[in-house]
Length: 414
Image 1 (cartoon, rainbow, N blue to C red):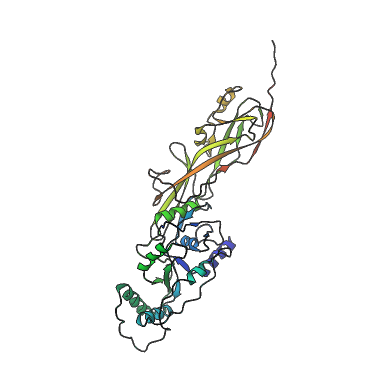
Image 2 (image 1 turned 135 degrees about the vertical axis):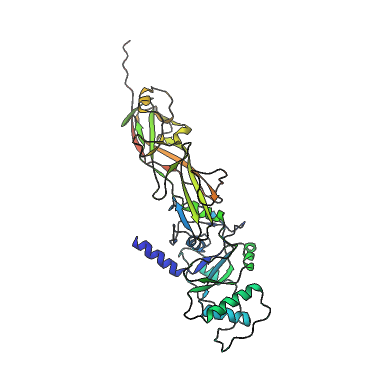
């Protein structure tokens, strides 16, 4: 735990980029990968382009519910990124000189190394290749120069803020951010950044670079929540009869569900087991993803010497006899199981047709959907939509359970 904490702090110090917008765009999608660096409140994340954009997104997101998973999902990159340009004094001086003279390039700060040693090209290379603004070298002025001509409203607001900060004593905490197009996004998407101020002041302690109207959209939050979704697991299968089974006599299968390490395992009124995860920004945007069991199957460990039974009700959860565990599988009572004879069909399990030793497993499949906002209902609500870019949830499977199958011995008294 201490090593993880240290690594998180080191990542926060090293990475100076921030994603300031996450508009959905048509192309240039990035895939969330099992990752090189730890996000502040979630799993490690990386991007196929080498940009550290999803680590930056995670810095702005709080996860709730069943989080901590690592599911594949493709998310379109945000069109704009921002990197630290300078503090209240140096950054403000550079911006003032830029607005007054606009004759020489502003010295760009050295950028940090990329978040992932395996990524290429890196976020550093992408950001450092962004267009630079023009200005003279910052210098202390003996007196305030006259207002620069022809400033638009956006420029005037930047100038007012810079002049307020440059002479403040003590130096206010915070940083100016240089805003530019995200090299991972399409050219058309990057054009949206032209409407933003080229420099944005972020007060110290907020750690959130936010521009009104350019919030992380719910669909992007849904992708992040999906990546975090931690599914329930399956415990050891329970067989009836226990120990040995017999040819042509059904073997019933029941499976306990193991709740995720975080969040909770719940069941809908219809008996569908489900988990959920949410992603929320500090400014209140949120999305929730639900995942529920769609079916259960029994693999008897042989394709020739057994007949499996997998009715839909096998995936409907019911409580164990002690009332503490959700169970899947056969809904027969022990008394009903004892009455089933040779060759009869059952709901969940298998009938072996030849003696031998077989490795039986049971699996459940999952589906997922999302809605904007935090969860307000039990289970997936009406209108829940598939998660764009989702790669599919991996089925949960039991460990193989060895089944000894013997021939039924009969006595003919005729």
